[in-house]
Length: 427
Image (cartoon, rainbow, N blue to C red; front, side):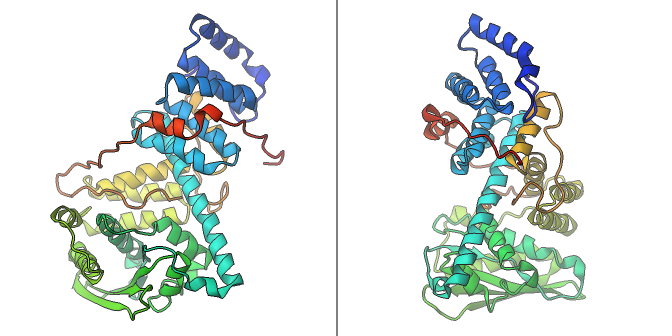
C-alpha cells in the first residue's frame, strides 16, 4: 500500500501534502524504505528525475527485493534509453510473489522490452541483408532455429496448429542442455519484417535463407496436413547449414487425437539426426505433454496467434477458454498470466508510468491494448523455453532460480544510477 497516488506528468504541487507526510516519516526513521520509495515514485512521475533517482537509490539500498522499487528503477532505465539495464530490474518479477500487483507490471515491461528489442534487431539484420546479399550466407553461431509449420490442409480450424506445433518442438528441444535455440520471438520478428503473411520465408525450400539471417547453423521447418478422417501428417525438414547438406526429411503420420505422440516422434527424429544422445532425465522431460484435450490445445494455439498479433486481451480469452476445457493445462495458465501483463503494462514507457499511477490509486494497473502497434513495437521475448508441467493431475513446478534479486540490482549499476532525461514534449 502506498500513500503516493500519481500519474505521469502530473504537477508536483498536487502532492505537497504527500511529500510532507513522507518526509515526516523519514525524519523519524531515515531508513524507512517505503517512504523513500514512495517519494521516489512521486518525484519520478512528476518528472523531478534528480530527486527520484536519489530516493529510489536509497530505497533500494534498504530493501533490494521490493518490487515497486525495482519497477521504478527499471522505468528510470527505460527513460534513459538503457533497456538492457531495465531488463535486469524487471526480470526480478520471477522472484516476486504472485500476490504482488507490481509483479504484473514488471513482467509486462520485461516481455514488452524483449519484443521491442527483437523487432529492432529484425529491422537491422533484414536491412543489412537487403543492402549486402553476401551477409546472408554468414553463419554466426551454432544455433538451431525452429520455424512455424505451414498448413496445407483445407479445414481452416486446424490452421492455428502451425504455431502450437512449432512451440511444442521448441519447448522439447529446449530440454536438451547441449542445444542452443534461437528464441521464437526473434524468429517471429524477422518473419514479420520479411512479410510473414506471404509464408514464403517459412517454406522448407526457402527457410535456410531465413535461418542464415538469424545466424543459425541448423534449421527445422515443415508442413502439415489434417485429412478429412482427422489424420495428421507432418513433413519436417532439418537442415545443417554449416555443412550445406541437403535437408533430412522427417515424415510422420498419426490420428489427430494422438498429436503429441506424433510431435514427440518428430522431436526425437530431429535429436537423432543431430547426433545427440539425450540423458534419461531429458528424455523423460520431453515425453511430458501439456494437455490431452485437442480442443484445449487449439484454443491455446489461437492464443499464441493473438499474442503474435499483439492482441493481448484476445489472447487471454483463448488461454482462459483452454483452461476452462482443461483446468490442468498449466502452460495455458502461464501464457494467460503473461498476456495479461502485456495488456496492462505493454506499450510506451509513459503508458507504463500511468499504469503504475493507477495501481497506486488502487486501480487495476492499466488498460488493455488490443490493436497492433499501440504504444510502439511489441517481446520475447522473454524466454521461449518454458518448463511445461505434465498433464492429468500434475502440478507445475519450475526449475529453481538461484539468482539473487539484490545482486541483480547492484549489478545493474545501482550505485551509479543515471538521471533519466526529460522525454520529448510530443511523446
